[in-house]
Image (cartoon, rainbow, N blue to C red):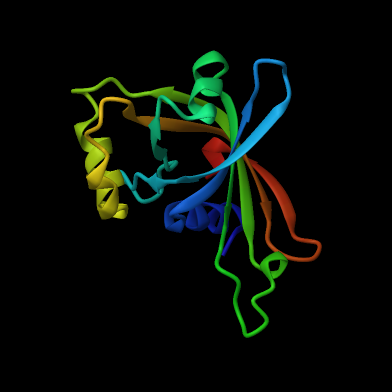
Length: 154
């Protein structure tokens, strides 16, 4: 599998990620979020990562002020050691935008299909679907196998 193919595979399979946002003072802030990737009609297309976020959350407030963000997604550790650094991982860099209620039905369905338990709170007024648009992806797939790829290579 190519590096771009592995990165795309990790993005499509991930159900959680570390979301890095920028605080109002310019400092970093990282939190754990649930994610789902669109598959689209073309399996070769660049995946779009979706998140269901609360407007009350600090990371969402950060995104409302500055849409630049990163997501760290990782494969489950393999083997019996469970060593997390042995698993492939990809850091996505890009921007996040809130999808308007009413025009987010397809994205909402994709997210809830990946996270059925989110149905309990997805309808709360402070929750909305956010779309992460990938600019670049930085893949670490093992010792000496590190590659940065553009979104169109995904």
